[in-house]
Amino acid sequence: MLLDIVIDGLIKGSVYALLAIGFSLVLGVARIINIAHTALYMTAAYLIYIGAKPLGLSPLVAMLAAVGLTVLLGLVVYRLFIQPIQEHEAAVLIATIAVAMMLQEVFLMAFGGHYLGVPPLVDGFAVIFGVKVTFQHLLALGLALLMLLAVRVFLMKTRLGLAIRATAQDREVANLMGMNVTRVAMTTVAISVGLAAVTGAIVVPLVTVEPTMWMHPLIMMLAIVVLGGLGSIEGSFVGAFLLGFAESLVVFLVPMGAFLKDSVALSIMILVLLIRPEGLFGVSFEEER
Image (cartoon, rainbow, N blue to C red):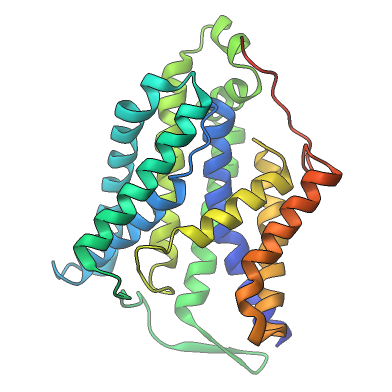
């Protein structure tokens, strides 16, 4: 059971980290609380299903196409619905909730409430210390960790990554230094949506695709961001693995109480807000006037 918890916790933590980091990037750079972030993750999963099943494409081709289409959709949503009201935080929050609900209703009307599935990229399993672990789970874990490493290298070692971090730290100073803050924000939105879409591609062979699959990751992602600190990439990474392992412990140690996993995440989030409102890594932003 210990190995099951470790593997499951690593997979959940990696997946939540990708979602939370993408959310934190947009929050830090564009000051957008994007509730539709996990709805775009769901969109990628549905597009992969459409490509792999009705259209008969190979799962890999369907995944690549779904990531590209989801990023395009995310940019269109940003330009049409978010950017015109970006200075009004409450309006942006309401707009992203509306987008998420709209996507849910679109897929509900198109596919009903049926539980759909996508075939795994690889079959078979490995026996690790007496525990059977499917190759698909190992592949998902490897891809998620590789994506996390790629994001880290991108943010720390590239000029665009530096521009994103500088804009997240202080938009006004970045603008005065000659950075095109609007273009950086647009690029950050594309990267954020891309991370959500890639996360959907990684987990879609492991989960059932249905219209409410975005809600649980949303709860976990918000709890992670609060736990780690609003806008903190490091905080999102650490918080994701803390809550990922906490969820795995609840599921494996209290099987009859697996439905409590959301409650555990929300309880941790509320506790952190009461004790340390700025989160573990304490990143705060001054209000822009």
